[in-house]
Amino acid sequence: MQIKRLVVLISILILTIAFNNYIYSQALPIGIDGKFEDWDNASEYTDNQNDGANIDFLSFKVSNDSNYLFIQFTLSQDIELDDNNNIYLEIDADNNPATGYSVNGIGADLAVKFDSQDFIYTHSGGTDYLIHSDIGFYALPTVSSDTFELAISRSAEPDGINLLFSNPSIKICFKENDSGGDYIPNYGSTFTYTFDETPVESYPIIDFEKNNPTDLRLMTFNTLADGLIDAGRVESFERIIKSVNPDIITFNECWNTTQYEAKNRLNSWIQISGNGWYAVKSDDGNITCSKFPITQYFTIDPTYINRITANLIELPETFLRDILIINAHLKASGGAANDAIRQEQADAIINFIRDVKTPGGALTLPYGTPIVISGDLNLVGSNQILKTLLTGDIVNNSAYGSDISPDWNQTDFTDALAYQTNERTAYTWLDESSDYWAGRLDYTIYSDRGTSVSKTFIVNTRKMSSEQLSDNNLLISDSYIASDHMPKITDFIIEDVIAETNTISYQNFIIYPNPVSSENLNIEEIKGKEIKEITIYNNTGQLIFNVIPINSNKITIHTGQFSKGIYFLKIRTAENEILSKFIKGASKN
View 1 (cartoon, rainbow, N blue to C red):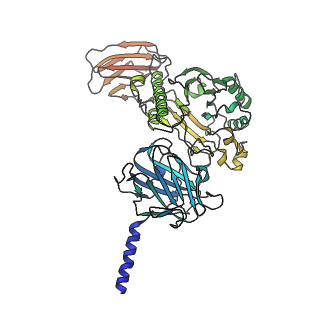
View 2 (view 1 turned 30 degrees about the horizontal axis):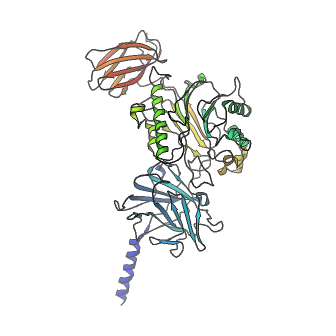
View 3 (view 1 turned 30 degrees about the vertical axis):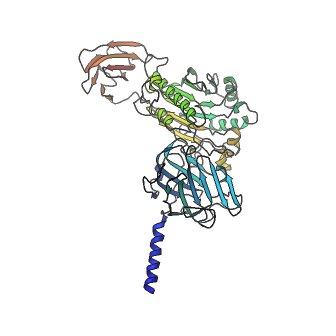
């Protein structure tokens, strides 16, 4: 009898181990930013693959700090988290299967239906439909992905009285609520997580001071329907802009605000010598403002909404080169039609960047000129639009030309990801009364060849301490009074790119020596393909040299007649055409 009883107990223990899964709890300093490197040390729960009729859950990870529960999950395919899916997150927040509603062996007190932005709270008094701000929920990325991360406040009180997380342990599952939809953990199995109360490293509060006085400070700020001329909001704008003291600003949603109104506001808030602030508005809603002259501008939006302008800004000689700022406010809202408009706008931006890097266009930039795409990009749908802006992968090649590597050294552009000054999160838009949770909509994308970011941050006065607010002459309400977008600040260092390696290798070509201080510049197609033509332009785009070689993959150009400076090379073979550049230095004696 005792032996039978022991066998039964062992069997129950085995079943408990088999159907109740645990991840080793670990508090981590997770940043909700749509990037996932900080999850590397988190324990992972892995699901069976190919067991879902549509979407297949692959894995999830759970962590926490003293303020938030963090969850990351990975799928078999890209989706848009807030659109066109039937995925639920179910949380048994009190670890009691008798409360909430029964799903997959747990009593779910909170259900999150992602695509409809529903937060369903089931309790003894019934069921309440909440919004994200009721539980301090946010998730990134805002664009489509196969991996997402989210946070829920540990101090959330969905009913205004009782803590959501009333137990040190919780149970979690995901489900796709379609016929044959996948579960993780699998149907009939549960997963338990216990909060780890080990303190994580403190978040380093970001102050507003430049790291270097000579850094160039760019702010992008969506003013939410003409906030600069709204009497009820303008004081909040004034406090924020004065506290940050930017050198260049890209304003969006200035539908009825003139460039003169923006300029006058800035001149009264931040006095500078000389002509004061410069301002340009040449499209339907953007104003670019600068402490330095805006010498040229080009409206480049091919769509009917007309919200992209490129501005060439003449910087003082201490910055080594001027800067091109592309002020962009892409089409808003989800859906395939709006995605298509944003994609066309992104294609046009890359096409314009190709033009300014190619001699002979409307504008030819010297090698290494910083190029920055700044503004509310409204990236809420397909991740292809962001991919286009970063990598030069144009979708409509027939209309906007071939793909390019947009940076000067034939690499991708860089996304200047910023955190808020007081919290590890990268969202830039928040409307606490909206059905939509916070999102990352405002971007700074730049060429990092000869340009680096010294500091970048997002101002969210809601999260700032009373001391920090006082130090910066801000009010806690300034962020949500001014706009539903928060200002994003990026400080740039513009570096010297004249001193380059002695040989440039690009698309099967080598060009040497570079810089050339001797008489001869050598150009070689390393795969033996015949060079058909070589054309050379100076840094203003003027044609100064052209040669058609005869049956050769290598040519030497005598540069003694060239003055010191930057030159652009167009090299054509039977198969392709590439653009590079060389620098003519002082001749050696």
